[in-house]
Length: 437
Ligand code: PLP
Image (tube, helix red, strand yellow):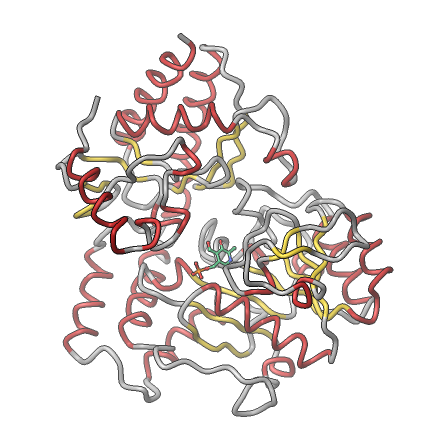
């Protein structure tokens, strides 16, 4: 057993001062049996080291942003230079234009962008802009898709497409929840019914075009085309939340990813971005067509602002990260390692009779303890959370750090190597063996 006495002591101390001991609930180990989360003190490449000097192979990648591995020299240099030049001016900079142009080149549906500080802000503002543009109020979203913690998107499904949402968190009024309709992903009939029921009230349909929040889930063939055409026929905008997916599978976003056909038919009106595009510093961005984006202040009536928005440190870090991702073959290499990993994990699980379904999209994948496919949230819920918790703990004790939730993905980075994959496969084999005994 790996000793984590210092993490345990720090957790006790953190509980005295920080609510729940963590600064984001997803970091707590509540979903994997509780106890002290691991306190890290240093990270480099694909590894991090905890306060007890244990080393872990990292598949959390900070919930996605760290796609080039930790402390990548090119990004570190960009951040250091930005720090030396002053981290925040409250004025415009040439750097912001550079990153805006890089985003536009990679994601052609963006005529105009605006930088914010998080994915939450980006999503929240796309909704405001869609409402301003359409003059309508309601939003349709999809069960199990997380869009940050702003009020409107923290609303759970009602019991059917014509039922309004119920607040998913205390502090969200039923009035707000009544502006949201939640339908299952990959089910065009449910969406059709919701659009028919709420027709002129629907400002936008908000979706992760490739889901990253109940595992990695592809839209079924024709699904996004159907979604876009139905929304448009209804006069509603399509908002893609690409906070996880942008720059994840290729140098671009899901709306331009070769794994999805018919790109012309699946272009959104507005896109929310975050995570990778900041290279690990706080960032978000949203954008869309000129006409829609001109709703935003100072040009239009939809207000959105930010003291820290476009700060030179985050922007420099984002530019540097995208420059690394422009390198030859980086996505192919992440995919090659992910294929080795998923093949090996699946065959170990099969060998020890542990039911396991893996969804992989290039260098990202999710492990679901079940025997059925995962195409929507209900199927992802219907998996063995205790088996996942046991696997998580066995892996942690063998120096492999996964996200502490059965719904979260594993992310490969450009820093992972065959050696990391070999060590992970050995740990997985040991873990499944222990679980089967
Ligand atoms: N949208 C998606 C798809 C996300 O996965 C997340 C965060 O995990 C967010 C939005 C919110 O981003 P942030 O945590 O930067 O506010």
